[in-house]
Length: 72
Image (cartoon, rainbow, N blue to C red; front, side, top):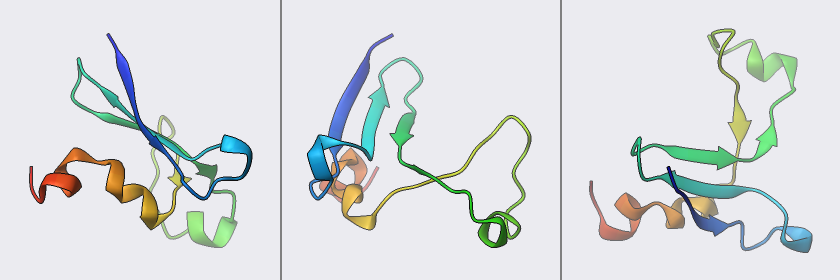
């Protein structure tokens, strides 16, 4: 398995997160972002115990190949 870093948030201070990765075995994306801890926001979601929610800025969408090519 190889994870490929697609890009880091260009506005992130000190080169920190968020970061987008691609897993070439599963074909899935891994997103490193800000942990959502706001109870009001989390209360609006149905999150299974084995999942979590992160937040990342819209400007990160540029790193997804489907967005760059304009389709899947």
